[in-house]
Image 1 (cartoon, protein in one colour):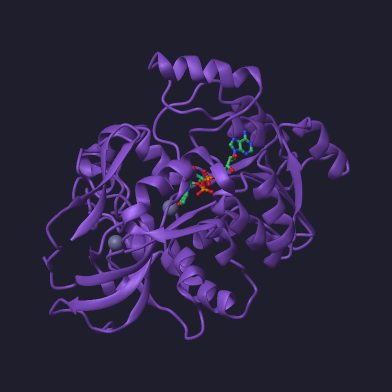
Image 2 (tube, protein in one colour):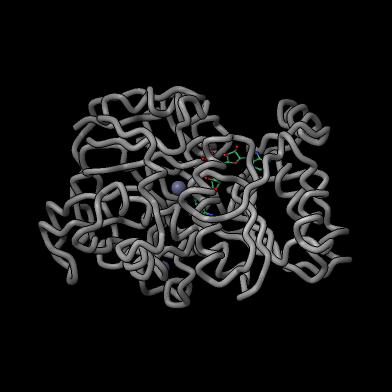
Length: 389
Ligand SMILES: NC(=O)c1ccc[n+]([C@@H]2O[C@H](COP(=O)([O-])OP(=O)(O)OC[C@H]3O[C@@H](n4cnc5c(N)ncnc54)[C@H](O)[C@@H]3O)[C@@H](O)[C@H]2O)c1
Ligand SMILES: [Zn+2]
Ligand SMILES: [Zn+2]
């Protein structure tokens, strides 16, 4: 089969690889119909996530048709049209039972890497380096789906591929930021980043009753999407003093909930960006937390900060004094999609959450290298590149 492989820093190519096979009784093979890029892939592409090997197949947000099942699969069958959660859940360990499914103790084949770096590993994830298990990704004709009973969700009739595919990752990730960030009816929420994840966090905040939601970015086409499809306010950080503007729009207090949906490759015109850039180049820091610092400083006293953006290692100049003295609650996590996806598919079907507008560029898998170039450089208004094997 054909697959999009990582071949070195900022290099990908379409390769011919072996078809996946059923390895365990709970596996299924899914024929991929739609698979999409994610901001998380950019961190892999740039070599910021440890454990990438040349030849690794990229892709973790996808949907398709089940074409083969293992002997122990009970709830899914050949022919099912499913969207698959990017993280894997065994369904039986203490974390999976508690709904904290990306922390699954049984799905990561290489837990030693995470244990060394973070003290414990995450669960398995498709196409996301050895550190999440070394599983083949979804930018391919076929993909092996471990634990298919827990991880693959039936797509409601009438929901298109371009709508459903985002239920794999961007939509539940955004929902988790708003839900576990503690958004309450009447709250003011600020979201850093107007990519797929930030937009979905903003929409979730509104559906959870936030009175005012402000999304911060610098790309006009993304901010226009926020206004048109999410219904939130926008703030262009390249043209405005974010801290002053947020105070102005929140009665001088700052947002109740600050959601960071940018991650380790944040951009800024501020001096701390230059500092991070130099330190990461010298390998004295691993991640660039510009947006995270701003979210912590902007949050109101007693407010909460939810870090959806992916971080890999160690950051400098972390404003711990603001966290401590303002009594902030800071939470984070890889998405716990399994607890949200069925509800979110219903909301997508009901028209409460628009997702297909994120699919700005739809192309055959053969064009995926071009799609990655556009997504990385954010050219031609690319918000997400969608591939159809
Ligand atoms: N927690 C999870 O489970 C999970 C799941 C999916 C993605 N993510 C992470 O969420 C983040 C966003 O993903 P995405 O797909 O939306 O990515 P994306 O690259 O499409 O969007 C990121 C956006 O952040 C903006 N940005 C950069 N610096 C900024 C700043 N200083 N202030 C405000 N905005 C800034 C960029 O302009 C861009 O529009 C990534 O770090 C990704 O790895 C986490
Ligand atoms: Zn993702
Ligand atoms: Zn588990």
